[in-house]
Image (cartoon, rainbow, N blue to C red; front, top):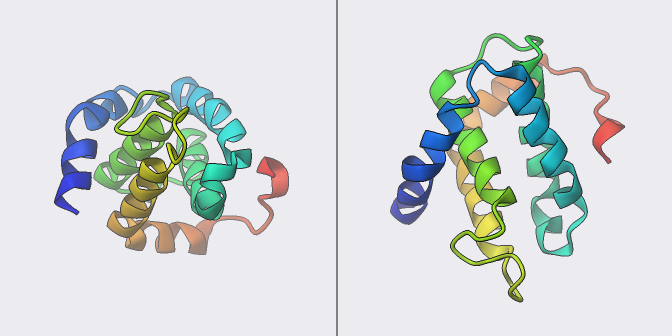
Length: 130
């Protein structure tokens, strides 16, 4: 848990801060993330990644306004980590997505209540990402 906090809180949180309040930047990130939904190494985290994508999309579009900025930073930082091909374990190495799955799991745990609140809000039809 401390390792994950250190990974996310430094560089990735700084990068994530540049996305706050910038709809086009967040939606661009969503575009980069969509191909990752079909990568074999991330299949165990697919539902979690979809939930995080839906969350940041609704925040960016102004559809979901009752969010915590610090929790949003954690989500964006984790998603930025996933799309970086040269992270702690580069994606091109066998098992290279294991760190990505771990970071997503950590983020989901850190923002669990935020996501529960979001799930109460969000519309039921989110099949557009699959």
